[in-house]
Image: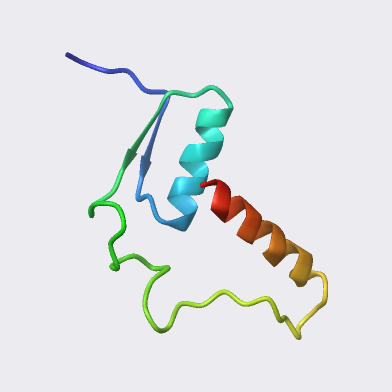
Length: 76
């Protein structure tokens, strides 16, 4: 059996899963591929050197963006 997709997303980390989610919400048939199974610790958003913070001293405009990012992450 063959399948037809509008989009193929390679890599389902933070960016790839967000892209696949939004493409699917827009009615696209999406195939997501990742090297590792779900809930692995080998992606770029894992490990001691990867953080997301809510305190941004560079500019206060970043804080609402981060809060919205947390909300959207939960949706994924």
